[in-house]
Length: 198
Image 1: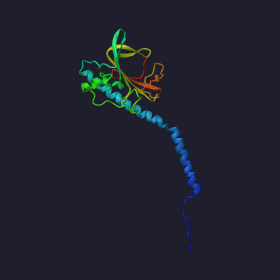
Image 2: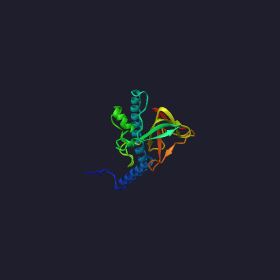
Image 3: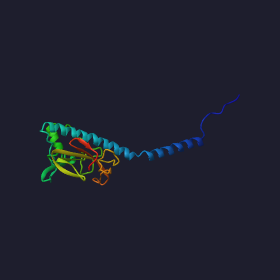
Image 4: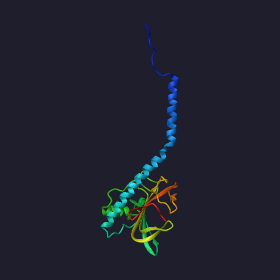
């Protein structure tokens, strides 16, 4: 009576396959940067949040004679005229009860305020770091100019390679070190996305 040997893999064959799988996994991790994917996901959430806020500002302006809400964080003078500005971290802060987000909430334009995916730095609080200017427009040489009944809103994005970030006329992305790391600006003027700031 003849017996057939059992079919199977040898120990050497199994070790070779495990080594190949390990090498492929290492190569895959090197080519697919997980931190970049996280930055892109966070930035997508910020883009959705800024779109929501722009929609709410536009709704507010329809019911308020086309005037955007005032920023409650501070004021300044441009071209001899007053403008106001605000940061989303001021929302919910007792020191700044007239945040533009608080005004939108009181008006009923805002139901929920977007939350930043990272919760931002300590001084940012639980809300995305949006910068808002009322009675301001984008001016030449990366400046702001006074424009009545106008507004500028931007968010800081983590992925500085994002093609939707604002650039100067020579095509260089404007990079900020606002949070101790490089970010780029995702900018809107009167609800219109801007990719060039001349």
